[in-house]
Length: 225
Image (tube, rainbow, N blue to C red):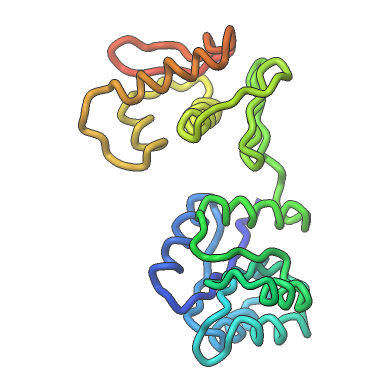
């Protein structure tokens, strides 16, 4: 499937970089604009933008005006970002045809989940958010796990760890690789962090915890017998 383009519009470069980095990890192509006027120029000169993440308070042209101009010609999905939590602003956004409205500060992962949900509703993104292995089903968008049809409560890191294992079924994974991928930083301490989380995860998964095999002296492998 061809990569989808997302236009990120914010006058703060750090905010654009944060959002861009999370979107790129999800295989989106990210275009950036630092003010409203530039956003409008980029949108109308680039015909295949799939979604816009748009800040409200910007120089030259604010997010409301950008939204008005784009809505005259296009129904592209728009997520509006604002530092305010004013109900009037939210209502104005929906009146202008905004699809989602998120107040700062926000979780970049939640923002990306909203992007994916909107694109799925628009039939632009395949729904690969639900993965199954044996009797375990993991829903990435809803952040839910069921085992043999029954819901299982996992901590955030336990969920991320299970997600990583299920995405890499049958592969031998070193502790270092798991830590770098799930914890997102280089880890130079002992292996107890990963071992402790695996122990807890196995316990919560019950009999299906046996899907997580120990590779002595190396790490783990997720495999359904």
